[in-house]
Image (cartoon, rainbow, N blue to C red; front, side, top):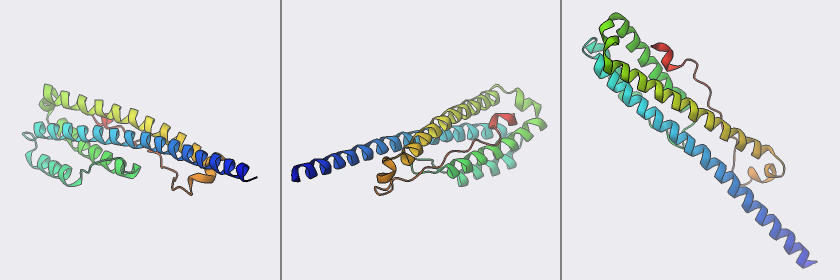
Length: 179
């Protein structure tokens, strides 16, 4: 009788360890993807700053304000960030690109500049990478959230501190649509 009880307890403990380990691995995948999105957003901001420096000679005052906006509103996206943090950063990039687009419409010679075109292409490239990372993130969150809801994991997940994760909403407008 005692041996049977010990076997049941041992099986439950081992099951709990396996559940905890699998959920931790899934969260690690989510965090890695969030870090990747943060890297791509940071690179996008760098390309945007370069683009603004190229635009300075055409609209110096406005570009200086936009550069200051980047400096004051740009924040690092890390594994601890949430989807709303990413949306805020993407909105900043989108708004600044809208301003740059207006400047380039007023100064067609800016659009003809090879470096300007390279910067816009780099921003589009980073946007595509962010989109891919967003898909991977949401897929990882789907798998994690599904695992949390499935029996018998659902019995243990809340007790050991695992909570449902939020999805990344698709950007309302692509940054490259502004060009």
